[in-house]
Image (cartoon, rainbow, N blue to C red; front, side):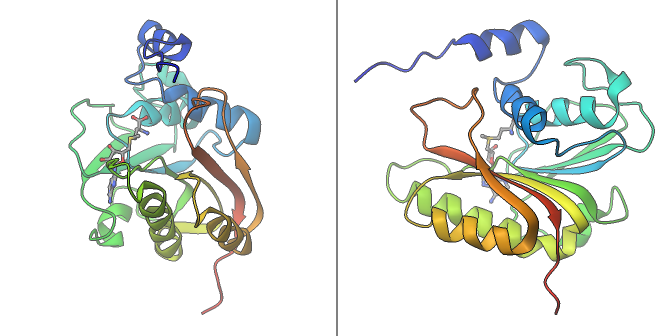
Length: 210
Ligand SMILES: C[S@@+](CC[C@H](N)C(=O)[O-])C[C@H]1O[C@@H](n2cnc3c(N)ncnc32)[C@H](O)[C@@H]1O
């Protein structure tokens, strides 16, 4: 079996440009291909540690923050990150991070920094890998994201969420399609060929009528 190249092109690019992880390039490529984040947007980043997606999202919502610096500073745009782990880096006034488990957190706590439902919801959450049932736990995290959307996303919001392809993948994709005007699976080039990860990218949230 070929050995995984740890210090690949995206690792080196991330180091050179000051991003906290190579995953920064996955979000850049998703946004380049699918236009999910615009200047001025409020973005929720679920599973945000160590913070590379926060850096990229800040550049997109508040562009004058500068590449990799993630200082924000533009008008309106804000990013709120949530993770089980504490994010050690501070990203300036336009970003807030919350430590917590998305199965337990009160949505009101997540909304508090922006005061209204988000324009964009991102999830790069991944279960701690055990080699057994990882894809199912990944799909479960995604279903939790969909369950939280009525509380956290405005009608018309966009979504990008990671899922490990497995037996529940198709049902998850089909379910997500019912909630958005447009929904597709997308694998950015920065996602390793050897990984079963896929991103479900959806535009224009249509909350279910209760
Ligand atoms: C691949 S990392 C995210 C990398 C991040 N997008 C970045 O670019 O820096 C996945 C993260 O999901 C988080 N996570 C997994 N399950 C979670 C849960 N139930 N609630 C909140 N975060 C969770 C993990 O703690 C981990 O930090």
